[in-house]
Image 1 (cartoon, helix red, strand yellow):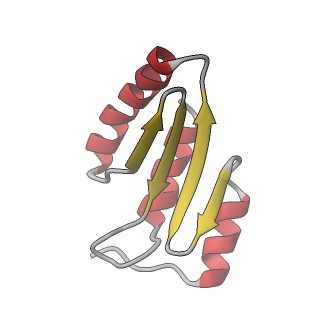
Image 2 (cartoon, rainbow, N blue to C red):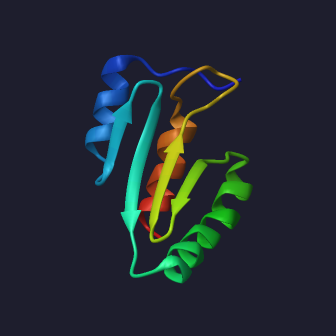
Length: 92
């Protein structure tokens, strides 16, 4: 099982991610696209990196707005896996 990060480490890693916020035991980013088609196309780009990492985000789609949240469910909070996948998602 992945090791939970301490609050200091969470804040340090979060400060290195542009566009992500810490919300309790998860990190979240929100993206706005021109339309639904662009939003879905971007979400589809998440599939391969998430599968490769064996770590799957919670995704909410509302027309052209996409919210992605990461937490390590089996660890009960934030781990290095969340921040590694967030970095990949940020670079899509």
